[in-house]
Image (cartoon, rainbow, N blue to C red; front, side, top):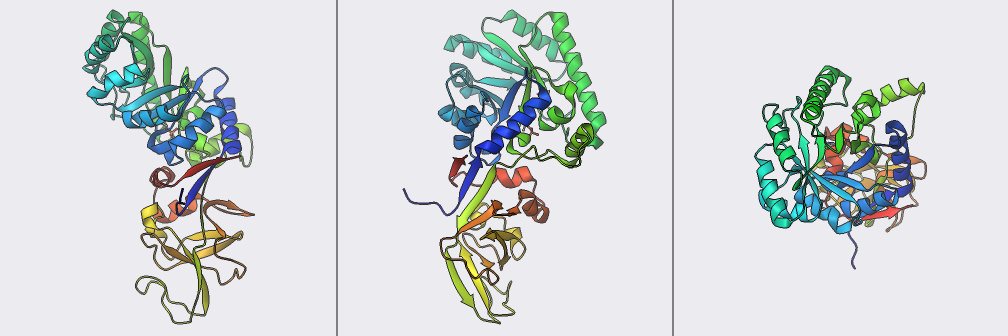
Length: 385
Ligand SMILES: *Cc1c(COP(=O)(O)O)cnc(C)c1O
């Protein structure tokens, strides 16, 4: 098999430590569902899911049937998959057949699920998502009692697996009043379930930020995305944690991701010469430059032209000139020992130096999640200890 121009490594020991940390926060009982939408936030579903399973995870949430199928291809038979977002009507029988749970946010979905379940001969696993104030997806409170009546009438064919909602912005203290309101409305929905005597198996509302910072939002399951990948959801959540634990800093959450390539070529550039396209960079002195075999088409942000850095031999090498479609150049005048084929770290650690995702995103104004989730699926991902 020929090689790709870059590679991503996932560190299993770091993941295990993240899971231990989150587990301590939420307690032993709740299910820790790993949110692996967007190709596991760019980490790569195919490698990530089996690694998570090795660390004791057996529940996965995704955003679409397409992603559910990706998980199904690599997960263990006994693992659970829930679709939180789009599932087209024609895919519902497939989901039921494969024991995949799915969010229902419109009453009209229920009779469709019922018909499909009858045809397949297996119950549909339904998670009713209630509207609480994010006004994204979520069943309106007017439809909710009717939905419960329907569920109660059809328990043979529709399994009421979950009652859930999603917070719009739990990572920010400024949104606290809104989150409190959403939680209150969720509790009201739960109360209606009790009154109608039809209870969900799993109550779940917490994302990473809520699970880490708001203990009372942890019910039977939590849906953890960003934190399991080793990122604090926000400074607010991080500082709340420091305050709670009376610490000055905490490295419990560890990045599991690193992105690497190799030096493709090395060249000398005379003073006064321009490097790459246009006149973006002119050598003000004789320079040594390393050519790297990837560019913006491989997910490396063009906004880092003349600004970003990579690590070679444990030292920072600044980008010179524009990021091209599949090449860019870095200055290695100060690292004369570099050879063609040497490892280059684009994101991650090398010796005692580190390049964080945030050093990218500070420049590009991308969210960490956005930067990671956009990394092309074609980049190979491997798991390392
Ligand atoms: C993405 C998502 C999550 C996970 O959010 P994080 O902040 O990454 O933990 C949970 N629930 C739903 C519905 C989501 O879309």
